[in-house]
Amino acid sequence: MISIIIPVYNAERTLSVCIDSVLAQTYTDIEVLCVVDGAGDASAGILYDFARRDSRVRVIEQDGSTGPATARNAGLSAAGGDYIGFVDADDRVAPSMYETLLAAMTESGADLACCAHYSVGADGSECAVGIDDRLGRVMEITGPQDLGLLLTRIPDFIWDKLFRREIICREEIRFPDGRVFGEDTVFLAKYLSHTARAVFVPEPLYFYTAFSTGSITNTVSDAWYDIFENLKEILYYFEGQDALMPYLSELCIRYYDRRANAILRGGDRDFQIRYLRYSFDFLSARFPDWKARMHTLDGIAFARVKTSLPLMRLAMLAPASLKARAEERAGR
Image (cartoon, rainbow, N blue to C red):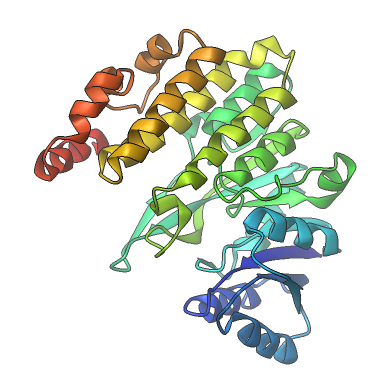
């Protein structure tokens, strides 16, 4: 059986489409664990209606809003399946997603399956996002170089993957309670360290809502500081594994790069400057050569600007039209 965990918080607008897509799976031996996290809307009622119509749906209610990490942990504690999948309440999945991922794991003997996905825009457009070709179809993880490649090249989401519950239970892998941003990175990094083989499915089978209103990903807030707590936990987890340090350095730099891109789009300037300073201090304390390293990494635009606080401040003041042209150039 596959246990599919869905954290739900004020998701009444998208919830029915999400649950319908999960229940329409061609692989039917599933349980759908919907963890209602302090929702103040009609989400709970919608879920109980699904549960009355389909016994595979279970509703778990939590008091107050504790965040997606705690909600997912509650789902893990209640799960009875041999495999674990995660879906976000504002997304949907292709009918064949879990049948395809499970078949890939079974055929390859892998501990993890990962598929490509669609990024869905505000206008409903769907852009396919593939998997890094360097990962191949089936990847054996036999040493630090393989693990490092996984840590830096695999999509750092949990919703496009299928996990073995036995590994999660044996290694006591959980999400960091209370954090609301990037918490899945910690879970994934720990799981990858106990993965002997991974399989990658090139078909896009998950539909990720990239424009979700109110999403932490799209909102500049203090929740961004959760990223540093997550990275600290990952660095501590791999402490003493010197061969992994170049990859962990890259992981941290790429996280900074994403937030730097978001900062350049606009927002609260005082917050942005504080966040930039904290980012520079965090990286410099752990990886003194991070600025030089950032210039060598592929896929990073305007590294010269992003490694200089004065240049970042100037870029933040640039007209919106200039920023749009720069972002277009960076995306090419």
